[in-house]
Amino acid sequence: MSFETTLNCVRSLSKRGMDFGLERVRKILDGLGCPDEKLKIIHISGSNGKGSVAEYMTQILLCCGKTVGTFCSPAVYDYLEQFKINGKNIDEKTYDRAFGAALKLAGSATQFEVETAAAIYAFFLCGCEYAVLECGLGGTYDATNAVCGKILALITSVSLEHTGVLGNSIESICAHKSGIIKNCKAIVSALQCEKTVRYFKDSGASFADKPIQIIDDGHFIYGDVEFENGILGSVQPYNAALAIEAARYLEIPETAIYSGVKQAKLGGRVEVIDANGVRYILDGAHNPSAFAPLKNYLSGLNGQAEIIFGCLDDKDLEGNLKMICEVAEKITAVECPSPRAAKLEKISKACKKYFKYCAEAQSVACALESAKSLNVVVCGSFTLLKEAKEWIEKRQ
Image (cartoon, rainbow, N blue to C red; front, side, top):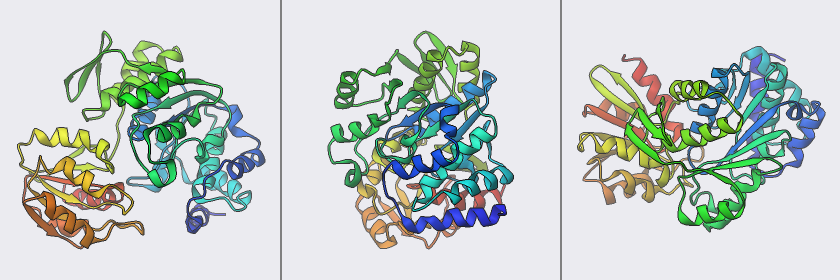
């Protein structure tokens, strides 16, 4: 098949929706010759920060001269960015080969299940030594948890999320997240509530809990070592610390760890773009806890920012708006370009509860055209960011 044909076949599986379980993925991996068993797998679960930790780990391993495959979701700007070889999007030829082979074994598997197995097979085909895998949802029954060959399980900050699937207690959420701990070392972020700390301590996991001192947005001290941080955000030192502890467990040299933290870059997380005298801030945060870094950044702008906001229908709409209403007065509601989007009327009604000035726009582009502030924020869902960035880049 051609790249386009294979891509369309994979995307067509989206109609199968979500169907949790490990059997279908395991069957595909077995049919591909068990490529996961030939990789050193670092598996990441948690509520917030998974993508950041995956990026830190990838860059640290690359700075140590390792060959690394990275699988993260969802895509922010480009579908292929979910599948990286040595920090770069998979090429079309490799995608066609690996994903085409997985499709032949797909049976009744979902899109995410095929993508998981195919990504691992692509990493094997490209000679990767390490694979960094981010859970899609939960942990225990997530498709990525079908793999063998894990050397590390990393758990980022945990909070209530996807309660319809994972349960409505923090203990239930923790149980799902900790399901990735299978015959391997587990390290947990120190950015946790009291209940999650107690849960993971009882499970025997280690913590990345050396003292953290934040110097400024780009520098922090972890333990007694100062690091330059490549990813903005007030919680990023905690995500970096988790990767640092993981790297030290793997006995990676400190010079590579320092360089990896510095080189880490992540789109759509307090991503700042200056264009034609306007500062645009793009952030895909979609639950209240994840909004903390953006809120912290905006607090330094003294209310001189306007928000463009949309979200998916299964998210905590009012909880998210409460997080940012204190740092901006004006908000424009938009509807996400997704079948799961919350309706514009619903978003607008909620915005009026928390913001002094509210407007509606039919698209992100329309909202950006109407924005008057020198600081414009697009947030609430990763699904908004591609359109926003394309609009901004045309004006740079």
